[in-house]
Length: 510
Image (tube, rainbow, N blue to C red; front, top):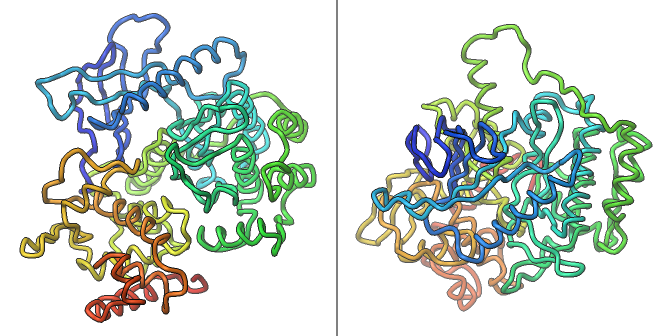
């Protein structure tokens, strides 16, 4: 079995006019269920996707942000003949004192989709419908930018595909309202689609400063991937591609676009991926050029993701799991659904370019490990490092309990310390967590803590910075700084981490 749902909601539960039906997916920060409308209510559809956010995750400021976004989206859809944004129909707050685990939870009521661009690319690289889909994605960006918003996390998993084959932009968790030429968004994003000026940008009290040109950069990366099945910056891993983006931004390296990129798209992608935000093509000009290159404004007919003929039951189940899981990512969910034991097969190769699949890293934790590393823009925080530390800390034992040292779970967290890293918004949890501490909580928190320490270790300390971070995890970054390296007490531990780091790192990567 995989991790329990972040927000367990029983089938048949009512919230507003909606009845909860089957689960779709879950993650550390919410759970998505199918929803059925119970009676007529204005222009609401018969079915929707209900995203439940845990109690306490919706601060007044966040809820105001969501309401504002919903109001703008509703007004925007009324004015558009071809809306390219996934509808967010309403937000609700559960009022149910008899169910304390649900009371106060925020529910986002979202348009249901059939699949996602990520699922399509996994099943059919370089799809024939790619140019038409790119035109629709660009149209969605233009609609969002005209309304005064920046998406902030454009990637294939956040492009949903509807029953008619048309594309919608989704997951507006990172969306930020423009204040003149820029906006502010949380510090976390997907490195492969983040422009170089934001990879190591300063994060202020309001978050990270972002402009529409960040979406333009992400579109250039996405277009290159859709049309060539490769990233425009060289490197076998996100870490290597981050390094390549930094070198490109400094002017010490050049773009090396794939020879397979069609000529009519080459200049478009190049202008999206200009070194500086000022030099990138504007959204309206980009839309004009993309529509001309695509040569169609009609919704494309998508190829079937899987053949009609029946396969063996195990293969069909695996395919269905893949589609359900990747589609869920479009709703902002970062973990895979609980399917009663089939997840290990589906996840066994997740992140294989960054984390070896043949060295004993449990399949059940691969996605948590890889995504925890991707949540940090610092290249040293890699999936292999997190896996190596989990091996050294607990031998991947989720039930580890060491009361004498007040350490529990797969990452040996002290609960009073974990409280500061359990949430992704930089705000400590309102209460100290109590053991047992699940991997879905412990592993992302380890990634956040490593990211925090990375920037606080003194420059020039001897040794591998990744191993220095492991030492800091065992003690503190201030202790490592004061010692001038790894404190003697932790050298044996760090030697184990170094051994497993080498073992888990795929050949040819750092």
